[in-house]
Structure formats: C-alpha cells, structure tokens
Length: 353
Image 1 (cartoon, one colour):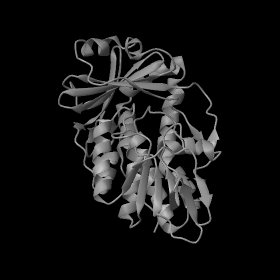
Image 2 (image 1 turned 90 degrees about the vertical axis):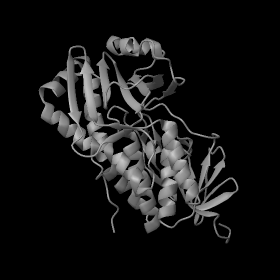
Image 3 (image 1 turned 45 degrees about the vertical axis):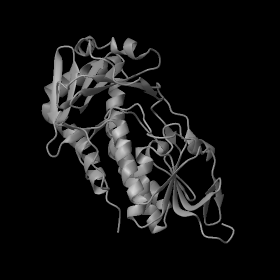
C-alpha cells in the first residue's frame, strides 16, 4: 500500500444485515472496520423475515436484540393437509427486515464502525491489502448480495443451472393468527406467512418468473381469503433469481460473505442464519491471517443449509413429488420435527482455536 498504513483493517462492501454483522464481528475481534453501502438509510430486501432460533442466538452473541414477534415453529399447509413442528428449544423471531437492519446498524455505530454511502463496483488489490476508491484496507469482505457486483468483477460467478426462482414480499396490517411460520404449498409456488408484530404479518411468495403479487397469491385461495380486507402495510419488493453460484469465496484479501458467496434458495428459511455464520467464519479467517481457511470453513458453515435446501428444492421442482411434500410431513411428524430442529439449531460452527 505504497508504504503507508491502511485506513482500516476490514472494509465491508454492503450495508445490509450480513455486512453490518461482519463489521460488528470485526470490531469484537479488535479490528477496525468501515462499511460502504450505495443506499442511503435502512436497507430493505424481499425475504421471509423469520429468524430461526440459531439466528436469534447468533445476534445475541453480537449484542443485537431486535424487536419482533416470537415464533414457536413451522407449519406446512396444503388444501386439506397440514403438518406442524414446534421448536424443541428456544423460540425463533419474526422481525421486519428494516428493524433487523436498525438493530445491527445501532450496534455497529456503538462499536465505532464507520459507515459511508459509496457505490462499489470494483476493487483494486494491492500489496498488503485492497483499495476501493480512496479507502484502503488489509481485507475486504464482500457482502453485496445475491447479484454481487464484486463477485462478478473478480470473475467468481458461475451460471446457475435449473429453473430460476424469484420472491415477492408484502406486509399486511393484520394481527397474527398463529405463532408459527406458515408455508403454504401450491402448484409451482410457496407462500410464507411470518408474524412480525402484534398487528403485522409478512407474506412472501416464491416461485418461477412472471406475475405480480396478487396474481401469485391467487394460487393460495385459503390464504388470500384470510388476508382479505387487511390493508397492505408495505410496498411489494422482489428478489431473484434466488440461486447464485460462486466458483470460490476467496480471491486474495477479498472474501465473499452472505448471499454474495452463493445461495441455493429461500425454501428452508436459513438465509440470515447462514449469512451470520459466514460473516463470523470470514472474520475468524482474517484474524488468523489465513484467508484460504475461509473457503473450507464456508463449506462447513453452509453444508446443512445446502443439503437440506437442495433436497427440499429437488422435491419441489417436480410436480408429482411436490404434491407429496406436505402429506409426507403430515404422515411422518417425527421426521418433520427432526428437519425443523436441524434448521433451528444454533450450533452451526465454532471457529478453530
């Protein structure tokens, strides 16, 4: 770096929840951290907004406790069929994405993380670190989302195979009717209903391309009837294509965290849990001065998510097996609880040493 000290130890590109969590992890490890984010103010995103118990525990370890609505488990629903699996231990939490961002941003600010509004599409790798515009750092954590510009710029993109899936989300001003995350199954789509407050529910619809929120909601007549008359409490936001593939997570001093490092699908609701775990693993590798270790740890951190999600997604992508998902969960409740407990488990990974 031309013989002078870097401006900070860790530069985080992307100021969403995972980027902020990575910056908090860095500060808790004794490193200086700066976050660069193109958007001004709260960073929202289309997602299910249900935090598994493991994600709640991970946030608490960071000193972050967002306000939300307690979630006791998961229900799979289809016409005439239902299966319920309640968490065996601590509760999850339904949290507005904006509230999650605010809680993490407040914690980052309290720890002295610098945050700047900057659009980043390129990074210059130098001897001993990186430079983005006028800011230099020893390490860069790219947390710039599903369509990560930095992943593309570094040549780490790989085309995803299979049918592209997308998500749409909207909130409704309605008291929750359940303390569960409901997953409604229909032909070619799922609808996730998450209580996020005493007078709010979030509805996310996932499926193939095409159609607006109302059109997609029509595939779930029972849910549409329950929502009838409840005013929309937010604008519709979209995300996708959901599946993203990276050839690697490490390029010299640059590490990809969260969705930027690769994403299978939102089907099992582990996005935040996995993102927080990758942020922790990346910072642990940086602290150890061994960025190559992160690639191995990323596979360990995400293995359960990738295997479980790929398995359910394989069934969901075929009409015949798709129709059997909810009946199978109903017929084998013990197996369904085992899968849900695996998703809920917070003991995902501990850094070596």
